Length: 214
Image (cartoon, rainbow, N blue to C red; front, side, top):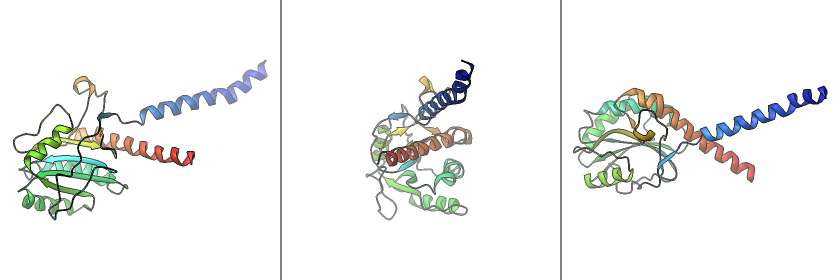
């Protein structure tokens, strides 16, 4: 009988622990969808009239508004804490949506960002104010762009155009975190970085599971 319990402790207990651990990891590694299937960005284009898409990409979105040089802290924070960490990942992109007329200021901002950064996956898209507000409303965040087409919030969108965030955020109403305040460092450094890592890990796991099936 003693031999049985020794064998049980050596083989069965570690197996149970492993199963519990992997179950916990799987649950943790899912970043919640807070708004399914938001609009695509087809209404917007770069300064040289190129169109991009959210489909098939992990995207970070921001809305810098008409006075983007006065709000450049948002872009600088996102550049340092998010973009520089993730821009080399396949399918990652940073998208700033701006109103027509902001092109000259955008060029100034890009020069400032480009001093220390490879901007190949940092995209600045322009469109009509009405399209900016329509797109923003598709995020269903219970917030709005202001009269200058600006929001302090930045957003994570997955490859299927779902808005990702948190459903258990202690600092948010009802625990729902739709976006991360980029005007200050702490929300993007303490929350957004971790959440993007979770999303990337989620896609890595999906690829491994697909390979194991095949």
